[in-house]
View 1: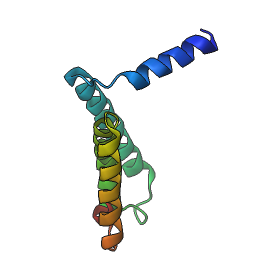
View 2: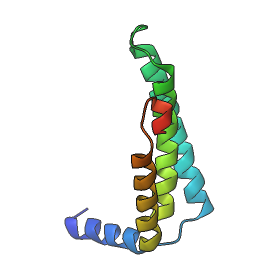
View 3: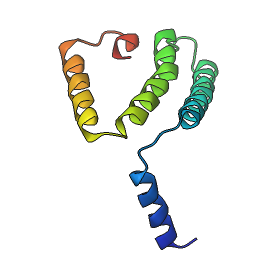
Length: 103
């Protein structure tokens, strides 16, 4: 594969604004599998005194939210800007005291 075909594939992917149900389910399934893997690795690798259950749950759930937001935002620039603004307002309004607050 040469560079030109790779660039053509990237351009074709950027122009495609249709996300099928199968694509959504595939992405969420893969993200869920990777999140469970990350959850288990953190659980077994971290020391007992260092382990935080709330942080581990946040680590496992956050990729699913991020994947959903990215799939939603890739179709429309106006929705993207509005969502980023809303998330910024929410972030600066509340103080983060616990990892689940961040989630």
